[in-house]
Length: 359
Image 1 (cartoon, rainbow, N blue to C red):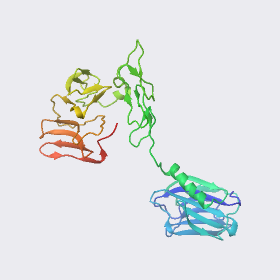
Image 2: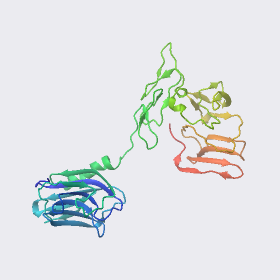
Image 3: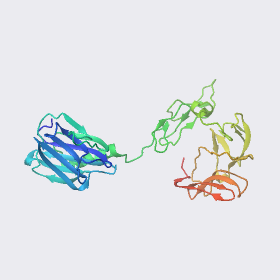
Image 4: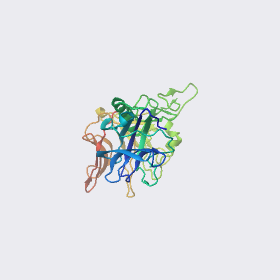
């Protein structure tokens, strides 16, 4: 039952080309007693309607279409029993309609109450969209209360107003949910963009923000070499694989064949630490790889990388034999550039993605 002290209905809704008479809500017990918000069958306008013992009161918003092109809108409707029924309608917290002598719903038991459906069998069209945070108050909310309701639920139900850092010990992909770093890895601070593996001689439990050193009489090898998840990475067709856990002096091991082949060299003091190739542009550091051919069956290059304010033309990789034949990924005006030189030059750019990421 709806009582006699006043009513407020409020919700977020969206509608994408809903059929005529489609309801946001319809509370009633048949055609004689109902309270409904729906799409007008003729011109697609908003209609607010109360039926009292088969007598119909309604108001239409003449300048507002019901359909929202699938975007969310907030609607609030207050019904005050004084003044022979005073109705006020708010859209997105703004008052658009006030009408008097519109009647007030009977205080009767309502047995056919729906969101997105009519309580009348003849109005078969359903809402093609959605409803969020539906509320019914047994009193009339003031204009300031409706405005507060709109503002408060906008953040909670329509979309976040800010992106929050994942806590230490966890990470996330772009646009993804936070996940706990697996055992053997860590993220040291809130907002880490990946979980880093613990170095040899240390370990961690899942969700850790740091690694702990192994006690005397125990040891650990790099987590990457033992991780079941890591070993699930595709291996078919793998031609080069530098995991940076096999280093002898300045020689770096390629493990693509299943055994270590030292076919790369650290140049100008470049180092390997914690399964990472560490490079300083100021010291002209890089890694060189022995000669090989790329074949004709297709290619995939993949790696993790980070860059701290690298200069123009800085490379992630450059495989070639001079300017006439090369395959490279580099920084061009701060954007990613992928390039192949052959008889012609091909180079798509990622215009919205910076390569100069900060660690």
